[in-house]
Length: 288
Image (tube, rainbow, N blue to C red; front, side):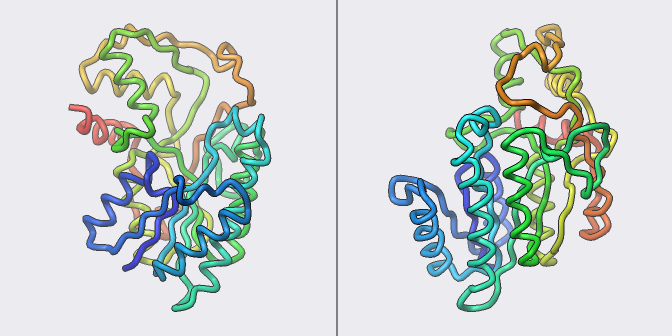
C-alpha cells in the first residue's frame, strides 16, 4: 500500500515510518522544511497538494500539529493553522484524489477531555486552545469519512529533533537529577510500539470513525507512570518529587483526568487494549 505520512520526521512519525517500511508498505514521508515552509494557508495548500499529486497514496496519515500547549495559547493563529486548517485540507485532498479516494487517518489528543474519567468519545470538554483546535480539526476528517484516533503516547524517541516524556524521565534519572512529576494528573497512554500497531491495523481495514486509543481505562497518574518506568529500569525512584500541576504555574490550563475508555476501538479493530504495566514493560526494553 502507498502511504503518505505528513509529519513523518517527528516523534511519532519517525517510528511509524520505520514500522510501515518493515510491513512492506511504500512510504512517502513529508516534512516541513526550508523547501516546504508551510507558514500560511497558501504555502501549506501548495506543498500538501504537491505531495498528494506525487504520492497518489492509498492512505494518508496526518501527524502535523502544533503540540506545545502553552505556545498555542500565545499563538492561536498558528495553532488553528496546523490543528484545524491542515486536517481540513487533507480531507479535501483525500476526497479529490486523482486515482481514488485515499483513506485518511488523523491523530488527535486525549486533551480534548476534562472532568472525571474514564472518558467516552462523545464527552469532550476542551479547556485550552490546543485541545479546542485539535477537536475542531477532527470534524473535517469525520465529515469526509476518515479515522480519528485520540491518543497519548510515550516511548524512546528515534529522532534527534524531539525527545519524549519517557526520554526525559530516563535521562534525568540516569544523570541523578531530581524530577517534579504530577501526582494529580491521570491518563491512559500507549507505548509508541502499540500505537503504531493500532495505526497499521486501522489502515489495513480502512477503519472509519472516531475512537479513543489508549491503554486500559483505569489509567495511571503521571507520577505513577514515572515510578513504574524507573523501577522497571532499575533507576533511582527517590529522585522523583511528587507535586501538583498547580505548582508548575503553567500558562495554559490543563485537564487533570484524561483517562479514556478505548473499548470502541478494541471492538471495531479487533485490537487487544493493553494495561499500562504491559506498555511500560514493553517500552522499557528500548532503553536497556
